[in-house]
Image (cartoon, rainbow, N blue to C red; front, side, top):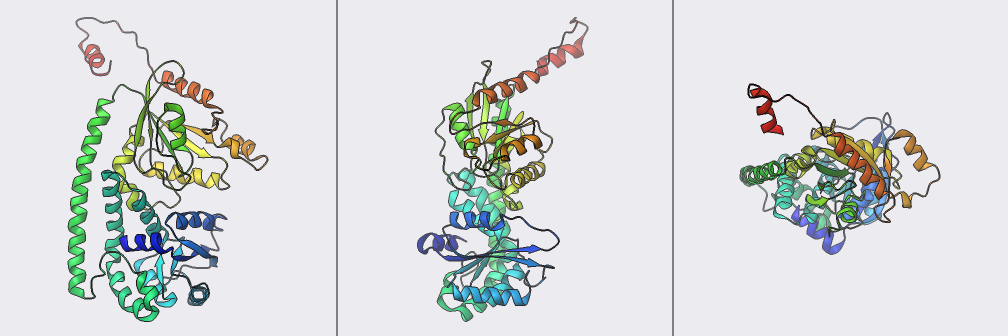
Length: 400
């Protein structure tokens, strides 16, 4: 995977994008638009895009033989180096497709993992990404070995140059078994190191008990880091690209009412986020899990905003935050072009706040809403205290 990353960066591989959609599901209009953004984020040049309707998922190739042959023709026509599917493919499906198209085939998960690897800057993020990559790679090691013979032999230098990842040091069952043991050993070590980070995170969270904690969540590139900077005068890196933030950043913030709270930014979510990433980024996502309030930042200028909202909700449910108190925040209202879109969304989400982290519009209302949520969480108890009322006194000492 490291070789793939270097190849994409250095010589800008020419990519064909494919979205295979079942007739029964209808599919998203923006499948290929988001895949294009992902591919370009990885450094590829998109030379062709293909959305195919399929009646059933073929167990061997995902798509039928005829469609696979058509794809091979487009690969030759556009001199493509790599084919990227929006779907998740099994190792066997990737192996069969590579035999037909004679270039490297990636699925959506592998592409996202690669992007995360290029974005990881801190030790924690690098460990998390490496663990996710290895857990994804392990069942695919056999495919990588057979790829050396089938693709390099048929496709020549271009196809061979696209080969990357673990297990490319020379064919052989013995070497494959060695690689499997090495990968298993490394996975165990990464989990040990991340476990230590988890423990430090838990101790850090324990020290914050008594302070109201707010976590920014949302789809990637929704404007979470921009909002964090605007509200706290922080200097968090802001870039108009997918997955610019992989690490949690926590800042002090004093909204309306003068009460200081902690505001955290987290990794952005995306449709069909690989499960390996969700599991590996457990320590990072602890900020959302332990927050008192989630601010769901929503890019209302995006044409697929309702689908993005659902994707975020799915990930929140997966990490156990589905029922956590949440305030929906419509960001980038200054960038909404389509007439009536904002009004339609306000009808669907009547309690959502509208703002622009870029211009500052609506920030005062956000501060007031957060302050009201914080005060709403306070509870005033009047009890008759006496020496004999030991249970009440114990409760007050523990939670008072």
